[in-house]
Image (cartoon, rainbow, N blue to C red; front, side, top):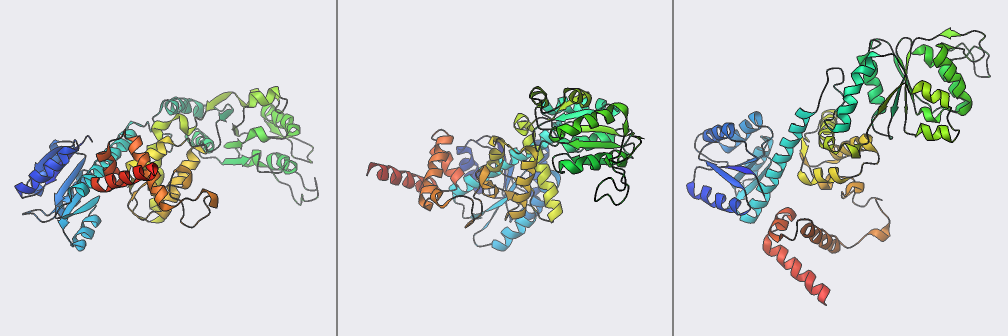
Length: 453
């Protein structure tokens, strides 16, 4: 375990005890004898965590906790309180403490809690660093990402926004194509005009022509009055044709003519009306393959593909996952009025290894679910949905009965899995699992006996 921890206690013997215990797990330990001295050290030395006693001369541990959270928000604070002083522990947590330990100290528990705090502090600092590194052009503040694919995208968007040429956004479902289309609209000279999105796959084929081009009264049974259609509704703004690959083949030449002539003929009409909107299309399909297979007109493909923008899947922009997760967490917390403020390293690791077939949309749904069901201020792996390795809902229908196993077997698999993942380091495994070393050794002996028997 690497990290810098500041131990704050006005008793030298306690400082020495804690310094020795934390040093055994590889932590660099600094000491301070008062809250005032601790703040001076924090200003001079980057810290990953602070461990402080509650009762000290001068500034109390509670006051120190509040001050650290105010001036060094990424540094978690663990407080040491007397055995049975739960009121003090609750007060510390309200002041922003990450966790607490009780005196007399159990050194295994102390090491486990402090190591977890250090991991959380390092993770929080890394998310903040990634946020600072992420380019946030003034014209596109809603688009987050510092990965290579996102830098390429953000470099292209301002130039595409200045043009009125058709744009084709290509990318998997859930990558944020409509968000980018909307951003292009707002940053261009048509920002004050309407942005009109339509999903070509969501409207019945027989109705789509009327929706796009409008109709005249009496053109068909339900045409009770004239209707201008979405091309006219967009005015001088932007018409966003999502899932353009689902456009019926017989409607494609009509759309091509509208784009070429910049005029539209309503269904049942006898004259054409000029249009002024910009057209942005999006698809998750490989339109070139569809052209080869005869499912999409080649001339229409080239007409809408003047400016092509690739929207990368989330699995190709792993560097952005934690920044996006924290962003969605903060949005959900503010919306629901809850105090969830971050996630721990186990939660982060699960996010980073998941393939995200649903892309950014799946990540947003995951974070909203975690915030909605969270019981703690910091999200842990247990707050993840089953698809990401979380516990899911007890008694729910997250899997067939045949997949259920006894609790003892779940525990055995988890313990052995943790030990395997960290290369057999049993002391470290005990810290991660939240048990003392003796308990872990007893469990392993029992497993060996069970296999031998």
